[in-house]
Amino acid sequence: MTTTRILAGVAALLAVGAALMGSPAPAPRGGAVDVAALAREIDREADHVTAVELAQWIRERKDGLRVIDVRADSEYAAYHIPSAERLGMAEVAALRPSAGQTLVLYSEGGAHAAQAWVLLRAAGHQRVYFLRGGLLDWMEQVMNPVNADARVAELSRYFGGVPRAGAVPEPGATLTPASGAVARMRRRGC
Amino acid sequence: MTAPLTETGALGAAGALAAALLVGIAFGWCLERAGLGNARKLVAQFYLTDLAVFKVMFSAIVTAMLGAFWLSRLGVLDLSLVHVPETWLLPQLAGGAQFGVGMATAGLCPGTACVSAATGRGDGLAVVAGFLAGVLLAGAALPRIAGFFTSTARGVDTLPARLGVSQGAVVLLIVALALAGFAVAGRIERARGARRVA
Image 1: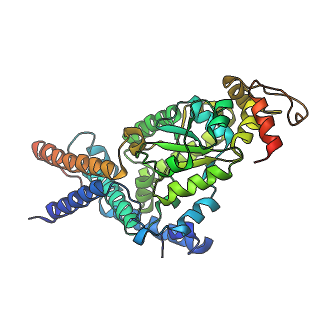
Image 2: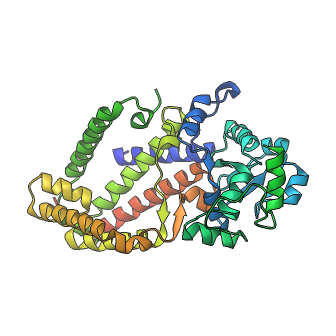
Image 3: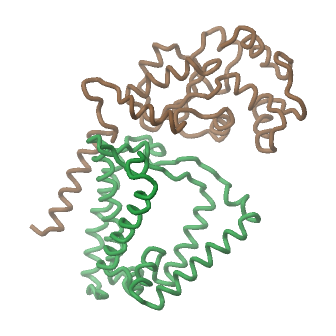
């Protein structure tokens, strides 16, 4: 058998093994979470997306995108990001996203979504992000951006938002049909 | 110790530059030893008389891919620290077409042109001068073509995400394609008399 054939055989074996393994992520030892790897992701800010980035993904119909609202049912019913589905924390923890899916989690301010991110990343899911600043950032940066550049302003109008020029609007000011929900959030805090 | 050492900071900035230099020299040496510093060798693949370029490059891809997958699986390499370039569909298609025309015309791509120039070949030096001039011209023209440069953004667009399958499945697919390609390339070379360029 020639060296070439031996090397081809080794490559084929390694490739079949890779297909059986599925993911190149190492299996957690004894169920332990690789907290160092998660910490590096957080340091590199690879754990979240901004509201404008998420808006672009939704508008472009990014393949495999799932936007998940982890707030309460009533809050979701009052307002949610277009295309978002609502899941409780227990349902999020039980998610088994396929390799092609990208999950973006959001809550009011981001804290709950960040916790959900940790749960999913600890379970080994790779393409998981949370919305930085939560729904509040969505409202401020997408639905009611102030002095936004043309690209963001156009994106805002796509989602039915009202881009504004000039001073930052007072909290609670009625800008879009959805902003009432945000005003309630601000009063309650996040 | 977890790789990539340049990203974890284990090497430091100077160490990372030194490592880049060493890896570059090693890569160039391999290209030269494979005969890829010779434009005739590269052009021969377009005439289907010597498919060494195809085999060398596909071997490199398969080796790197299997290495990255298994080193990650064994916990030696942190793939989350490996940069994956974003996709801008139309500008990259245009760039790829331009690259292909340049490569077919010159018989060298940037890497092999550097190897060719390093071994004192005049055509290699000319191609290096040409692509450096192209880089400068493109940089100077950037304000005018910035709109096109940033059009059709697809973000990080990978085969596993696009196909909806695992990364391991894509590894198997690429290796199967490579092995089938090598077999076909061997048959083509034998059928055409394998006029290898030294």
